[in-house]
Image (cartoon, rainbow, N blue to C red; front, side, top):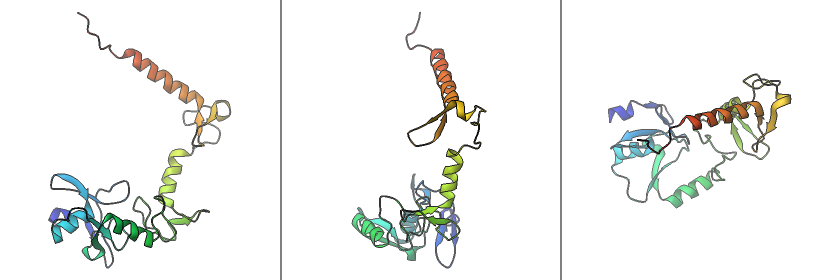
Length: 186
């Protein structure tokens, strides 16, 4: 129990989980032999087992929050209706009145902008995405090949270096030739 609560940062509002998180921004904790969402573990530690078919929902809409006064039990339908009422239910995309991005970053004026479709966009997630997918140079790929001679646009609209793609394919082909055959000799 102490191990769990030592990973929580308490404030006047939410008590936020500070350890491991899921890709959707929920806290996770090893409990009773398996990884479980932190808000569910908080409920079990304080209130006892969660009845079958029930979910632990957040009043505060903060997926990292484990404060018991911010949690309540509900069915799957209650969860969907709660999300719709709060404007969070729209194909997994955060709507204008959402409080956190799907990865758990809090929407603030500094960390958020609203795109032309009216969706909130998390600057942290957007910057991370752009850092991975945007070439660092306008003239050469990261391996020094000239973009103008080796460029192709992939199905996602990203620039791809044909020379790098060709070199990767050749490496894979050479590796496949080096693999031992499954037939045994002898």
